[in-house]
Image (cartoon, rainbow, N blue to C red; front, side, top):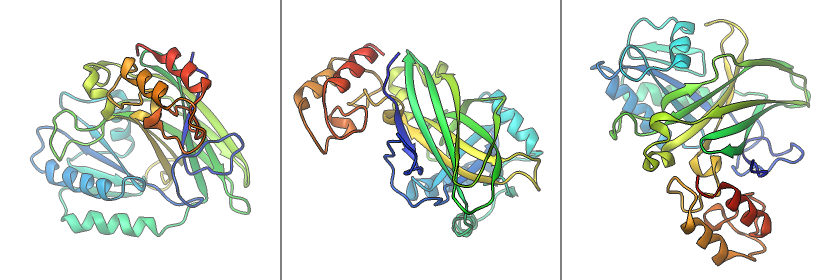
Length: 301
């Protein structure tokens, strides 16, 4: 097992955390759940608009495209569809509270995003990736509650998505491939944090062919532990992209091979300012024996 972990999120104050994304504490990241199907003629414009908002706000807006009643469903997605009582497509649910059924104007979804961004949250979220072997990983999700604010009881959701799937078209973004179907519930007191670890094996269409792997992402979000609509608010969301899931892939092409080793060796000895694409797989700013050892442990993935 690789001993390195790679973290991203909004928890900058946690001991031992190596946060690599910027943002103020409790800066809300919006989660948009887009329920659709390949046969739905009204779905593509809605999904494409969600993708436009995501591309314009890549660290602040996360889309989960959940397919129902077509060739690309998931067990997790079907459960979510039942949770929100989805009976018509397209249906979008923003942050677990704002549900829209049918096709609305593009400006409607942008206005919804801007409106929700102004709603404060007291929860921060962090994801750490630990590679086991092949497509198997352990993911540590840490939720924290700001001091002097209410405690939160939250359900910790976690999914793996594949961007530009099932087709490379503007409307097919962040397709849900799998998720944790028995999510844990945690209660976090003010000024404290709690960590949940989920093992996940990335496989199937996400893992093969290798050229699809750079489109892999994982998404975590924490949600009120109740039912829709009164107890379903999403307090915070976070994501990891492929090179954050497996940072030893310095080249970012889906595997760890001689090209990645050559990058590490070319930059070996860099003492500060190093990036993941230069071979800094543990995000500590240098390229040293730890980075080399981690790459060798992942070599052949």
